[in-house]
Length: 185
Image (cartoon, rainbow, N blue to C red):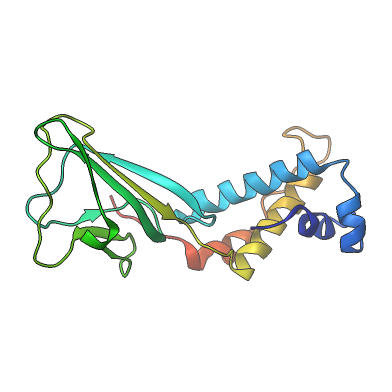
């Protein structure tokens, strides 16, 4: 994840790391720009650029050993899978009982070979899957795109100005392009 220090150096608010760490006047503004740049990049690419804990709630398991497509990419670990049995009791499946396949664009989750999903109650929202999703480290080219966005937004803070506003630098989209997940439908 980009740090305040790196953003301040990029914005030329300081020339050394020590100066950047000592300059705290605009930390709230700069951190907001960092957060907004990550949001922009994640929306643009449809990929998780920051590690987060995500939860998917389902109304039931697929039939037999069918796969569940997880709506996040990438997924690094399944933290828990909790479900409600037909008797109304809450149970958990251990990670060893699950098979996470991360080869596709969106990862899938299935029971281990030779087993099937357990039966659940016929109530909505009876399954909760919690996973760790997102990149563990922001790639260097994505960091450059984020810094370009931060610099652009720092210099063009208002939506209305006397001078013509500048568009987001085209290089941002070009740098994020290889990470973009294209969807049909």
